[in-house]
Image (cartoon, rainbow, N blue to C red):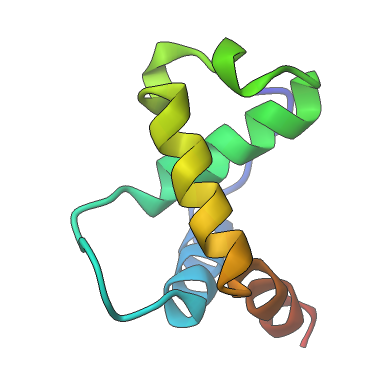
Amino acid sequence: MLTGMAEDDWATVLRVFAASCSRRGAKGRNDRRLLEALHYFAVHNITWRALPAYFGHWNAVWKRFWRLSRAGVFEAFFDAWRL
């Protein structure tokens, strides 16, 4: 990663992200790894297929991002983070 966050910052980010996510669906997903994958995707300006295997299969990451985007989770996340 080009930038790093302290564990306290990650705890805050994950708490806000979890609060903005739907209560339905699988609960065993790793939210931090998803957010790190999105950060990697944006910082390195790559295609989804070029995501390192560490983040999981690129299509699974993309599908989760797409579903969360359509549900308005990221807008709620950034609104909550801004406050």
